[in-house]
Image 1 (cartoon, one colour):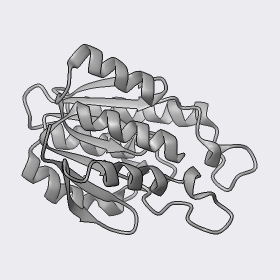
Image 2 (tube, rainbow, N blue to C red):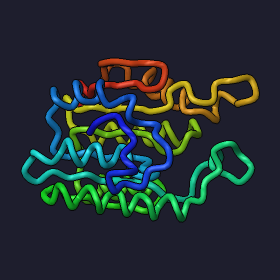
Image 3 (cartoon, rainbow, N blue to C red):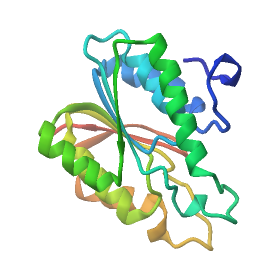
Length: 213
């Protein structure tokens, strides 16, 4: 998927927080060759549509999208990023349907619930080491990010990819360190440092490979 405004192509995106990461994702996913991807936090589905495209050549490709479509504190009324989440979910449904029409073979599963419930359910139904890639871009609260990371670790296979978005989001004096993603991500990497290795990082995302079950 090209890094471009796709609204004129039948998609209904209003923001683009993902396309800048596509070049590095292309490199990493081409190495891992995933057939099953889990995405925590889907919003309008821009990253979801990219993952559908990457899974298209794979027989039996699966994408699981987890989101409440209720928004986080950054989407509350009065905040700079305030959003009508019903409209956001509607755009997600449209964008995924449009993308699926071009890539019929990919199975897309929508889990409209809190990530802790969705991931626990996937562990119960699919077992551990089921996914090749887990992309963590849900709640920005450190306890939620840490919980997502730990559950994701057990859901991803050995050799698979854990990708975290918004590593440095919200790091300014008026924000509590424990209410931004970095607090949860750092806690996870500190405790799991012998079970994962960094593949790459930038100001916005961190990519880890699972090396031990």
